[in-house]
Amino acid sequence: MFSDRLKIDRAIESGAFFSNEAYRRTMAEAIRRGKALHLMGIVSFFSSHGMMNHLLALMEMAKKEGVPELFIHAMLGRRGEMPESGANYVKQIEDKCAEMGLGRVVSVIGRYWSMDREENWDRIEKTYRMLVHGEGHPVKEGG
Image (cartoon, rainbow, N blue to C red; front, top):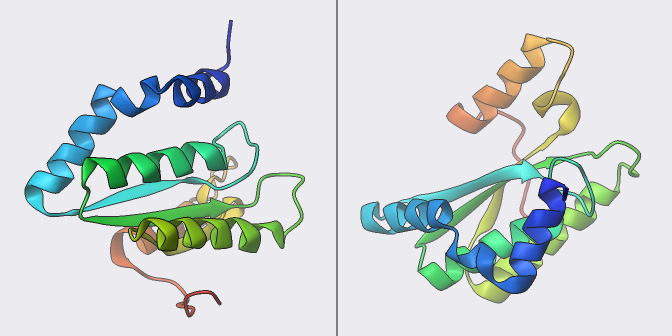
């Protein structure tokens, strides 16, 4: 039995990922409404919750499908990674956005706040308020 991560990796390699009907419908709806597509998830080289190549594949698909605007919400801090690695991941995303001429990182938050397992609802509330109301600490792009 293959893990979900391996199934996604294989679908990207084979090209089947890019004909996923749920993704295509979601992107088509963003296009039809003239709205931005928001991608949100763990940004890491390797994590049980997501991998960088999965995000990059979704970004490429959005470009190919004609999505008018792409917003990326990055959740950083896979356990065991150096804290500064998050800045490198964000830079990779920003570089990919520049290369494609589409997308930008609009929020960054650590897993401590966004993926709390201990029922510390104040952390989850901060994440919710950032995503829904844009509350947080603004920083300059590339900063």
